[in-house]
Length: 452
Ligand code: ADP
Ligand code: G6P
Image 1 (cartoon, rainbow, N blue to C red):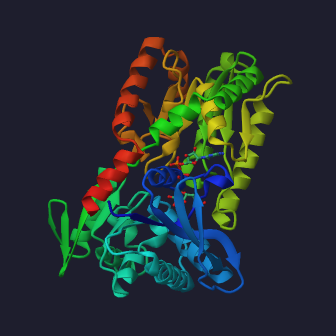
Image 2: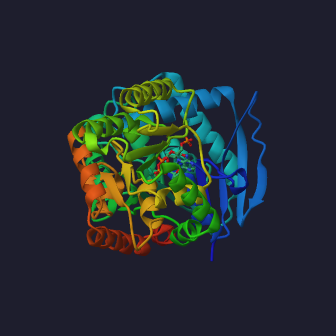
């Protein structure tokens, strides 16, 4: 079988411990069983870009990484990727910033990636490029003469046309996607938005999955990413998960646990979530002292101002809510800004009666899937899930909520905590059935079959 060459902004290496972010977690699993090559940024900065390749082997995955220079990181990663595209793709046009240097840095780094990876690509390899950082990479590979099968997968939402047109040079960005053979999205909803743009803004011709633009064609598909089901199930049944579970339960002193696990990102709806929790404690005073929320939120993209602002806002909000509701022997919100090993997370998920997974917009959301897999089938907890997460199209048996509504969140918490065992088991089983069929290997196979 031909090799799979995966290219993403960041390469995560198992030896460095847990990866935070759905893309890295999924690609680790997808590649470990495929003897592939994973190319991307090391996460390190150097004074001057050299293009030096660092090739290593980690648990069956060969990785090839390069360092970027300060200007690259500022303009490409902090700039165009995370100040321009990320907010725009998550419907936060109010936070989207654009400077010409961002666009220049974005193209420069995409070209650097393509120039450096090209010699590693062998005839017959299938090349799979990931996420919003690297949209124009395929175009550059084609210009350099690469005629392998090359596909692209977007892990985030694709925004509605009327938002996307606010981006300077939006047409140039979307046109560059036509260098790929296959373009994949997490859900039908994002796929529909993409098709709409192609039709209305480019005047492209759409015939089933095939979109033609001039003499270029691509196949656009929805292909939802899954968990490494077997790996996470094993993790959640491990001794270390048991230990983390028991430790968490002991610290709760018979109180009910609600859990949240998210990168510290404004798209995750954490302020709105805490407003919902505050409403719950206000409307249900008898539940005060009975319920504890544990929110794990490792800091992310800390050099970007909007991330510094959300972090400060959450510090203030959790402080205020805890100050207003706490008793000497009870604090309503335990808020931890750090990463945990995946086995520990699994144990913590299992200790919870409910999870709040309430992003304002999310391509998929793997935490929702992990929470369900980690549950005890005899006594499963309840998933409260935002209807604006891609996962809500698959996990329809979660309690689906509008994350902007504090009342709805408060009601969902009450419903979850009072849900009869039989109903919890029925909903859990239905969600497990979906996830068993569409795990990360199913996702990789579906996409690469299209590609090949
Ligand atoms: P995103 O990709 O936007 O961060 P996802 O929910 O799809 O959102 O993926 C997040 C991934 O990062 C999950 O696999 C989750 O377990 C992991 N993760 C999030 N927070 C932590 C943490 N504090 N410690 C370890 N892993 C984490
Ligand atoms: C999301 C994005 C990924 C990204 C991850 C973590 O999942 O879709 O592309 O890797 O967040 O963000 P970071 O900026 O730390 O790589």
